[in-house]
Image (cartoon, rainbow, N blue to C red):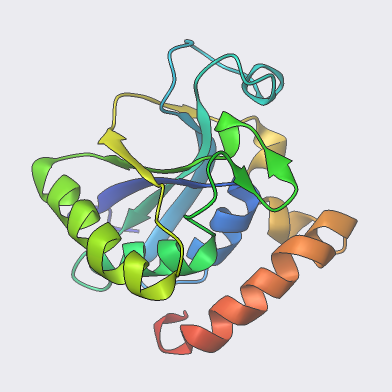
Length: 179
């Protein structure tokens, strides 16, 4: 795979397994990695992030070809794949580690994220959007058992109850963008 010209989006919208499963299905996305970002603690683990004391959120890093799928479309999928109106929670998951967050990598991403939050997200959701938009500082990959979680554990109860229904809605809405 030629990775020349790829860009990276760092996004958090609750459980990283859900976002990973969604973004892996998009044309122009070459890699999705689950991890932690947006906090203060160096080398966090799943256990420390879940404690809520690290400041990190569960995020995914999406490596994509902007010629195939622009960052603005990545964000449109992001707004549709989680509820950006609930502060520090997604469904039953509660805590700052589950917050909605966009960590921008350059000024163009910052501007696109701010515009997208005002226009796209606000049009999709009735309640105010509470997504944090902040500069990217550092990404810590999650433990190996978190990577490619849905594909490897499709039959697990969480995957069946939470991720599969989310993927069905995503596939219906964004079928034109699927691999």
